[in-house]
Amino acid sequence: MRLGSDPGSMHTPTNPDFEARTRESFAKQGVMKLLGAELERVEPGLVQIGLPFRPDLSQQHGFFHAGVLSTIADSAGGYAAFTLFPEDAGILTVEFKVNLLAAADGERLTAIGKVIRSGRTLTICALDAHVDKAGKRTHCATGLSTLMSLVGRAGVRG
Amino acid sequence: MRLGSDPGSMHTPTNPDFEARTRESFAKQGVMKLLGAELERVEPGLVQIGLPFRPDLSQQHGFFHAGVLSTIADSAGGYAAFTLFPEDAGILTVEFKVNLLAAADGERLTAIGKVIRSGRTLTICALDAHVDKAGKRTHCATGLSTLMSLVGRAGVRG
Amino acid sequence: MRLGSDPGSMHTPTNPDFEARTRESFAKQGVMKLLGAELERVEPGLVQIGLPFRPDLSQQHGFFHAGVLSTIADSAGGYAAFTLFPEDAGILTVEFKVNLLAAADGERLTAIGKVIRSGRTLTICALDAHVDKAGKRTHCATGLSTLMSLVGRAGVRG
Amino acid sequence: MRLGSDPGSMHTPTNPDFEARTRESFAKQGVMKLLGAELERVEPGLVQIGLPFRPDLSQQHGFFHAGVLSTIADSAGGYAAFTLFPEDAGILTVEFKVNLLAAADGERLTAIGKVIRSGRTLTICALDAHVDKAGKRTHCATGLSTLMSLVGRAGVRG
Image (cartoon, chains in turn red, yellow, orange, blue):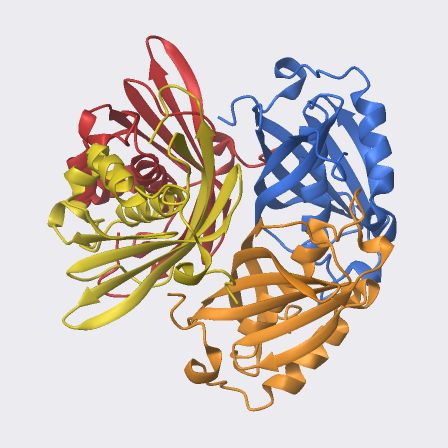
């Protein structure tokens, strides 16, 4: 299932400059810099963000905090949607939900957002995160997010 | 509705030291220090966390990033549940969901977690966040989270 | 919290015939008849639906099925949003989430949907359900839903 | 992503009679009979349920009601988890969330539940639904659910 989850074959960007535009918006997210998050992949309908572990990203047991995981997962989903938006559209997260599958215990956390459905107003993304520790990869979270495209509203452009 | 959402009258902590224990665990969350989050209220079944704005907590429009909001909301819900746990129990976020109601545009963000149902294994919390800007308060997010109590598992104590 | 959850004081319907229009749409939902659901309250931003128990609404233990509960909760939220819509707008459920707090074991199930935020395009509702058994009321579910207002799209009017 | 979503290769049932046990429990769900739902596939970690359209399963526009869709999706996820449970364990839905991707407009609705993570206490499932109309298949919903395994609690066995 997860029909439409292979964006390579399914999604065509309406803005040929989608990658530059996505990277430019990402660079404006102060919190990505604060966390040390890196934009690893920008494809039509798919964005991947990586995050090396630091103690100041942790919860009380020394693992990545669920909120930190959600922050990069939310951004991965938002930018995955954004790659398919027209040039003049801003983006807003409507809602998101995450199930934590395993402790995010490792050296590097990776979040992938993939567009499941791209509509005129709303886009739905699947979110997944894994953590790598000593060569072993663990799927540590899965989720869904709803994004809204905003055209012509000052102050909320991407 | 939101029956049971008035924790003052409904919830009795099993651990009389619940406040000290909650504050001690909060102090161990590296990410709370990184963000500058402050533990404002610790009551049986209710925790409130505040966060002053800084540019490095922002998304691309200069508002609080949805992930930052989720981070303090997740922690508020988790610690609200934690206040009702027995002394030897650790806590794990199972899942959470957040609806963003308005741009988190303001000087200070506040997240409140309240226990709706406290079970032996699982606790359900309501999450709400508001932002204050120039004396005006805006309800900017609402959500729900599911927490799990872990007794006797090394490495995951609160 | 749950700011704005008291619809009596907060919400003003844009369509004075909101109640008649809501009841008319409810009557068209074949599944409400099939389940035996009753529209109990229709107020600006609040709708309540009741459902007497029957064995054919059950899951394997003889309680109300979680899906049946979700069906009336989804409709309660959708119609709560609908009461605030302009006359020509249809409605669509974008997404919803339900936490089950206790077994829905009883003679009558009641779902209440309340508008938390009413926007031009999207409306967010809080969903709650309780079950009555031998005079005792149990809060058995809580949730959130996102509804979309559709103006001028044939085939999806309320 | 959706690691572990190919149950054929990943999941080993602990109870060799998982299929008979699942079919027996399904037959006890009164609401499945009421809706006319059919158990189409029962594999380790995967269950598929089909539902032919009838007007009394509709919302106000004549499509499958979102709650009906959720009912069979919830059951598909629950039974997918159930296939991996030990013989004496009952099951409870903790929470579920569904994003509606397209109108469920068609002759037959199909819901598939797949186990993403199977833990001792909690199991997480991916839910997906599609609708078939005149030979065309549309992915109309995607979701996630959390199930709890209950061992030795009278009255809640599968």
